[in-house]
Amino acid sequence: MSKLWGGRFTKETNKLVEELTASISFDQKLASEDIEGSLAHVQMLGECNIISTEDAETIKAGLLKVKEKLENGELEYSVANEDIHMNIEKFLIDEIGAVGGKLHTGRSRNDQVATDMHLYLKNHTQEIIGLIEGVQAAILKQAEANVDTIIPGYTHLQRAQPVSFAHHLMAYFWMLERDKGRLVDSLERVNWLPLGAGALAGTTFPIDRHRVAELLGFEHIYPNSMDAVSDRDFILEFLSAASIIMMHISRLSEELVIWSSQEFQFVELDDSFCTGSSIMPQKKNPDVPELLRAKTGRVYGNLMGLLTVLKGLPLAYNKDMQEDKEGMFDTVETLEGSLQLLGPMIDTMTVNDEKMRQAVNQDYSNATDIADYLVTKGLPFREAHEVIGKIVLYAIENKKFLLELSIDDYQKFHELFEDDIYEVLAPDNVVAARGSYGGTSQAQVKEQIELAKKQLS
Image 1 (cartoon, rainbow, N blue to C red):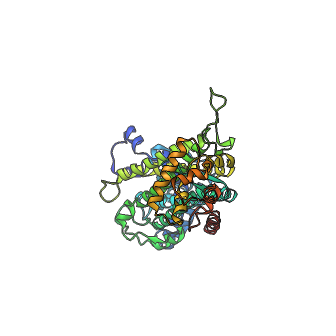
Image 2: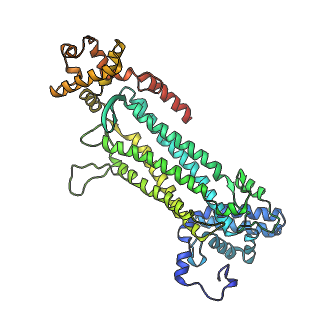
Image 3: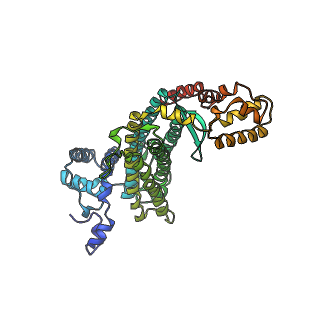
């Protein structure tokens, strides 16, 4: 079959040019969306009497046969047909004959491919939202089981203050909740129909774009045909949201790598999410969180790649835009795969509460509570801060922790200290004392978990 656009040309396309310009190796992922858009388009063509009802029904029947072959894995794509649109049209013509050529009436590949990508992101964004909720459910499960588990809280990767492990985990729940919000918001821009914009200027045929929007479930229609075919903001917005999600996944993955190390031993990842060493039999490597951490970079790269492609393009469509798809597909697959692993990995991990408690009993992370203790007894905070700094230095020099100092030791630094200081310094009480809204006290964490359950439901 000659090129569908070959009438104006006198020479065949150079094979290297054909390979360079062909996109079928990757845009075949849009096959289902391409058929969906074509079914709506031909339905409208028939209803508007642009083609006969008989031809419209024949084309629809042919498209459904092509769709069946797609679902059965029976389609063989050709580079000679360049892209998914021309391949599908070729399959259609093979099924029903020359009448299949009427399908392309009133549209261009420019508005067709934009529509396909809108449909693709519409479907996958909703799927990703569901996967995020699966990770949130796993976090909630672990949080509910570990409200009373105490872990050192860190700043600068230095032990800062004891916190509930549930509180630490729930921070990621709320990150993911914001991620969901960004995706839901991005659907507002995805939900615009480009089809009917033609190559860039609309069409002379009396098409009904509102009918196509209704058939495909789009809420809005691009009011400017040039914008419709050249807009890729909706992909950029998705890639941006995906980059933020992967950043959050990477941060949590980093924590899992640290927590599962021999030095920390705060958690143990299930064997099914770890690998071994080819030379060191004792090793249990956290390869999954390490790879999730690394894959963040490729998602960032996809965002920067498309931003760079688009930054100098004049209106309307340019062949540069062929480079918009591979990064989008890769990001969707990377993000979906990452979320599919992250949820079960969190769900099955074992929490070593004894190691966590041992850690908070052997540090100085309760020092702030001594300062608060002195403040409640009337000492200005800045003076209390200096006193505690000296106490911590004294404890370090004497190889003791704060709970191991005697009351005489404390009273050397200030007469306001009494025996009740030991109650104040107990890790459980340090955590329980932080009862401000959003704090780490057990009561606040339980309230936070109930709020999260309502959000998730």
